[in-house]
Every structure is written in C-alpha cells, then in structure tokens.
Image (cartoon, rainbow, N blue to C red; front, top):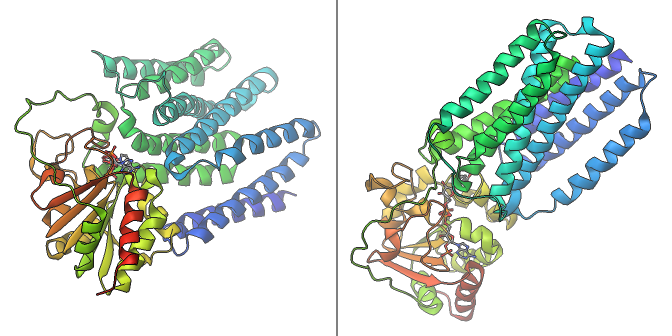
Length: 468
Ligand code: NAP
C-alpha cells in the first residue's frame, strides 16, 4: 500500500508540474488543464488509499465533505469570465480555511492524545499554516467582496494614520504568540486561539487599505499565501504532494503578482500600502476639449480604405462580450486584404491573459495577437487604430504626466497611429479613474455605445458594402 501511495503522489506531483508548463502556451493550455485535473484526481485517490489504512476513518463524513465540495464548486465554475478574479479569490478563501482548520485539528488532536508528536518543527509548521491559512481566508473573502462590488463593502481604500504600523504590530504579536507555542505547546496552548483571532483580523486589515482596482494583484499574492500554507500543511501531515503542489501554487502566485506589478509599473509596497484608487482631487477644470464623434458608417468607410488596422481590446470588450462581433469584423477586414492585428496589453481587462482568452475563444489566429512591446514600433505606420473598450492601457498621460497615478505604466501607443477610432459608452474613466487625452486628440473619433452593438453595426456596414 505504501508503494501505491508514493507512486500516486509522485505521478500527481509530476502532472502538476507539466500542467503549469503546458498552461504557459495557448496551444497546449487545454492539455495543461486536463493534466491539472488528472493530477488532483490521482492525488485524491492516493489519499483515499492512505486513509484506508486507518480503522477509525468515518467514510460517511468523508462523503458528506466531498458532496459539499461538489455542490459549492460546480456552480462556481459557471461564473462569467469577467467574474473570474473574485471566483479565484473565493477558491483561495476555501483553501486557506481548509489549511487553517486542518492545522487547528492536528494541534488539538496531538495535544490531547499524542503530545510527543508536537515536535518543535511540527508546531512551527502548524503555526505557519494557521497564520497564513486564516489570514488568506478573511483576506480573500474581503477581496472577492470588493471585486464583486458588494454594496456594504467599500470599494475605495480605507486608510487612517498609523495603519501600517498597527497592521504589522498585530502580525508581530501573532508571530510572538506562535514562537511561545513552538517553545512549549502544552504550557502556551491558550495562545493558539489568540493566534487564530489575530490572523483572521490581519487578513481583513491587510485588504482594507487596498482599492478594488488593485485587487487582482492582491489576489495573486493571496494565492501565494494559500500555497505557502499548503506547503506548511504538507510538512505537518508529512504529505509530499501537498508540499510540491503548495510550492508550485505559492511560487506561481508570486510570479504572477510580480508580472502584474511590472506591467502597471508599480511596486509591491505601492500595491499593498499605496491606497491606489483613492478619489483624486480633480484639477481646476481647464478648457474643455472637444470630442469628435463618428458614425459606424463613416468608421467602416475609413477602415475599408486602410492598409493596416490595429485593434486594441480592453475591459469594455470583456464587459460587452463583444469578442465574437470583433471576430466578424476581423473577417470582414481581412477579406478585403487589410492587415489586421490585435495589440495586447499585459494588463488589459481585469486579469492577466484576459484579452487572449476572449479572442482565442473566437479562434482568431494566435499570431495576430501581438504583445505590446512588439506592436508599439509599428503603430506610427498604422492607418487606423480601433480601440474597443480600452482606456488606461492607451492613456498617453502614462508617458508624460508625472502627476498621473498611471505615470510610468507602459501603454499601447494608439495615439501615434494616423487615425484612432474609439468605442466606449461615455466619457467615464476606466479602472484608474482618470481622464484620457487620447479621446480628445485631433485624430481621434469616438463612437459612444456598447462595444458589442457598435462593432455589430460596423460589421453590418462592411458586410453590406463592396470590397476594395
Ligand atoms: P479600463 O481602463 O478599465 O477601461 C475600460 C473602459 O471600457 C472604460 O473606460 C469603460 O468606459 C469602457 N466600457 C465598459 N463597459 C463597456 C461596454 N459594455 N462597452 C463599451 N465600453 C465599455 O480598461 P483597460 O484599458 O483594459 O485597462 C485595464 C486596467 O485594469 C488598467 O488600469 C490595469 O492596470 C488594471 N488592472 C488590470 C489587471 C489585469 O490583470 N488585467 C489587474 C489589475 C489591474 P465607459 O464606462 O464609458 O463605457
């Protein structure tokens, strides 16, 4: 039996590694998902085998837990793509809670019946597990609430004087209590619930000063905390697959958070303590620049005459679910021999790869989705740039306005093309809450409306008209 368990765990850990590797490329991503599912299933089978060795196992309870997991998990998989960040946060909350509960159960079980099992190393791992697990639980729940824009949870960052000192102080007290428990578990067992309460509170306090806007990055960080708590749980339970999977989860979450910070030109400290998204004091209203509007007929005519069209998709395309209309537009234009490419900003939308996933769904050839750094040098030669529901990622203020909250963030140089046509519903700002001078530039024409219906009108005009 022991060999069976070790083989299943080895297989599971190997598949998890391949799963991550395959998910790195759109061509192999599907295989990566299947490998991840298989890895989890094999891991569970191994654990069932492990549990079968204990006579006291109550299979009815195990079945109840499994059914509950399915009942909660399946509807979670039905959420729309735009809600994936908050769905992911909920998964982390459950992961953190599970790790916290397992750590708590193990501590009290061993304390009551096998105190010799509570070696310093194991108690250290349990303390790390419960601090990370419980703070991930409350932090992720709050993060999910902010992203879902739950009415009673403030979206804006809540800050007050001495906030960081207080938060770090609280975490420091939890760590000190943990050290005491490690040194003498029986004598300091009364501190165990204190550590749990402090970790739960710290999770909430960690998220309060962060605006809804920075939540996706914070969720990637919480992902890495959940992974680390799973690693600690692996050491507590002496379970190698948990250690491997937790380490993969923890490191990939951290790498993702770093990639997102870089793409927004922000540092970790700025995301965690910068209170980004607070209402900015508006400057004195200067001269109002005029916005030029264009009809879909006019825009279709302009695009028909172009040799190169670059489409910049953003969050609005995701909200409108306009990707299939965009595919039709792509077909209409390429049919006329026009070179059509998509400029993909690394943080367009609300999660990394958001635009790639939506466009891949419509089977637009992947080599037509071009990364920002690669397409920017070509934009001054582009005849038309079509911005569909993107805002911050094409805001030229990021290049020159030192007072702008997005100053320094790399952008797609849509303003450098010969002509820009932008689709959005109003002049409302995007994620960063700031105006965009691209929309009032001399060579920019706007069409206000839902991205799906405006792109639909463009397609209608093109499909009705003659080719080149
Ligand atoms: P954005 O700056 O949030 O702008 C999206 C625009 O889409 C809005 O101005 C909105 O204007 C428009 N819009 C919304 N619904 C629409 C609809 N149904 N039809 C047409 N237009 C619609 O989006 P972005 O340019 O994609 O930039 C992403 C932002 O998210 C960046 O600031 C980035 O730093 C941040 N962020 C991204 C990630 C990530 O991983 N991708 C993570 C964290 C933060 P109207 O309301 O006027 O229509």
